[in-house]
Structure formats: C-alpha cells, structure tokens
Length: 127
Image 1 (cartoon, rainbow, N blue to C red):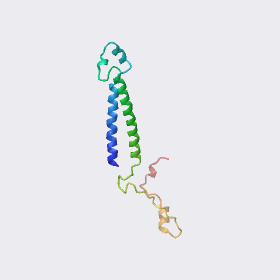
Image 2: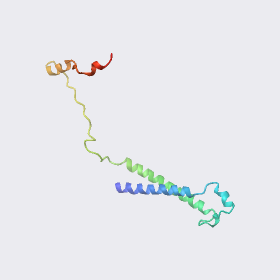
Image 3: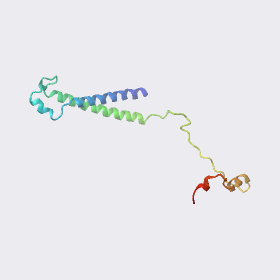
Image 4: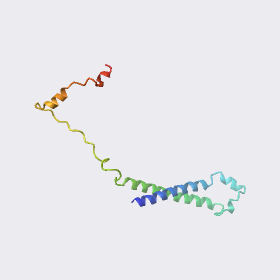
C-alpha cells in the first residue's frame, strides 16, 4: 500500500507541474490581436488555431487526472491503519481510583483531616 501511495504521489506532483506549465504556455485573450498583425502564429507547429485547441484540451485532461489523483490520495490517507508510534502512546491514561472512607480507617481519616503545611502557598494568595 505504501508503494502505491508513493507512485500516486509522484504522479500527482508531476501532473501538477505539467498543468502549471501548460497554463503558462497558453496565449491570453489579448494574443489574438498580435496574431492579426503577423506575429507568425500561422507558421507554428500546430497551425494558426491548433495550438490553442491542443494546449487547452491537454490542460483539461491533465486537470481531470490531477483531480482523480487528489481524491485517490485522500482516500488512501484516510484509510491507513494506525501502526506508527509505540504501544505506550496509544495507552489510555488511567485515573487513580478514589477509595471510600470507612469509620475504621484511621490513616485515611487523619490524612483528610490534616491541616495544610506551613510552607503551603495558600497564604500567598491575597484575600
């Protein structure tokens, strides 16, 4: 599963870079005026209008593939079993149990009735 995740992630990054490059190579709306005054677009590899169709269709296909790889990566990442970390990190922190005080338990009664020590910080709190 890790190998599949890595392959899809590399493909996702490469497709993202390709989409950025294709978007930057496309002509804007103002490029049509420059072509009318003889900028040489008709002598290009794809013809006068062929490059716009080729680049826009390729960008659309790569954008769709980018979308699919995004969803696939999200699905794989959300369904990963949690195997990382140690057993102690996943352990539940237990609270100390409170023991009910009975009449015969002198040690617990003395501890509860003992006054606060003289070095306690309770007297530092203003009243």
